[in-house]
Length: 290
Length: 278
Image (cartoon, rainbow over all chains, first blue to last red; front, side, top):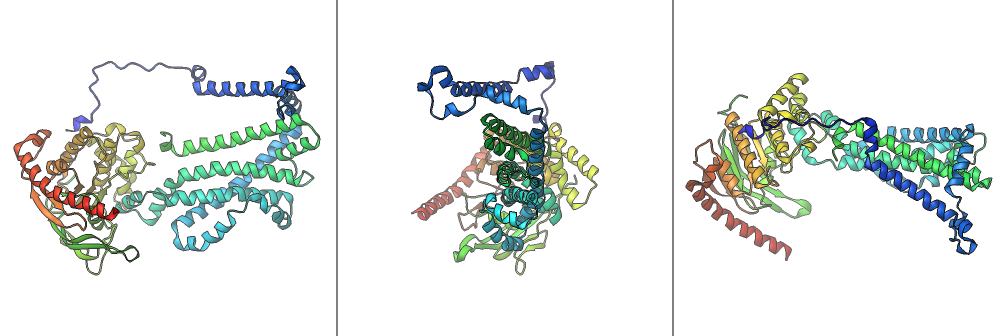
């Protein structure tokens, strides 16, 4: 009766899988090619839209679109900016703020969310104030934190932290509370102690929500950092960053450089969320199947 | 695995369970009694939502009972003064939709019990887990995650995960409910084979009559809510049983007998459902 489950008899000679080189794999990756095609089509349409009036005369100008610099001009400006140290300093300072705020939010948010989930007394005490503070947008905290924190840099760090913290906590709490009761019961029947239950069931069961929270939180962190950098307006302390780069370009009247800054933020955000996805895939091998 | 002849006898005596959400008394189980001998395969058949699972939850220690008592090998699990049984590894549950931990491989799932109970060293537990999975025909997939194997394999692995704890009773709550007929028949043969090897007492909830007669020593038909024992049918078909058993005359007669009792309750349950909606 067990033989039902045995693998079929090795009657047919197995066909060896065709080996493909890494380069060949990349070449045959359809998803990659679709992505590249989409970006190229987008750039071409943008170029046509931006140069419409130049090519077809003023009377054919599409309202608004004609004011946007075409991607070729943006590319030229970008090449000018690339070798400049200031541009890369903007990257570094924005990234430093995002990562520090984000890590603080993870470090405090995950334990706090888990405590809310597993302990009723803790939840009764801390959930109401949390829920009142949560709807306050991070940017509404700007004036108060400028007054409260001694330096601009600390204010930015604090606001960044807030942006990610609430999202992470609410995701962790939801994830931990939604763990199927069957898992808990099964573990308890098998003799799991409270600690086993927490470390082997609740924690891994919450991981997917932790990573969802992290991905969303990371996005919010970038939004908040950019806004805070624009508001802080450079200066000697707490200045710089990609937000200030964009703001500075606006003050200087360089449309091309504004777009360079915007695309830089897009790339930075993409890199950040890719990193979170990669860590998530590595950390949750059972999730790779879906 | 040691065969067990003299352990795993369940006595359910006058058990009543009243749910009381916001003062609305819902009687799920009413004065229900049944005796399950050691090493018996006992099938509980009744309409959906009749309180079978409530009974199982009481035995497993997930829920309390209101009156009556439940004993395992003469020892009180729950009864007067102790409404809720302790959860324990001598009563292992296999759940309706499966409860393998998705974040653990099959081997890790099976080894979990002995590891958390600290009855085996980790390496021992894993070795035992792999052996038992191989015995159940799952030797090739021990390192796979539950999401990577078929539902049939997952369910078999779950039964292995229960058996590694050497339980006195296996509590199964419609484990093969969502399966197609072909997979189901394979699961049945596999379960019977496991049973022949271990002789563990099996408390099996279902509303599939063929399943009940094919697997069971006794088929207990219970009434629609509140759950009461309506009729007990002994299945005297000798073991080992094969799929051919199902086309025998004996089987057909038993089917008729059980069907009659169940059908009456099904109609009552249906009408009760209509009344609740009206």
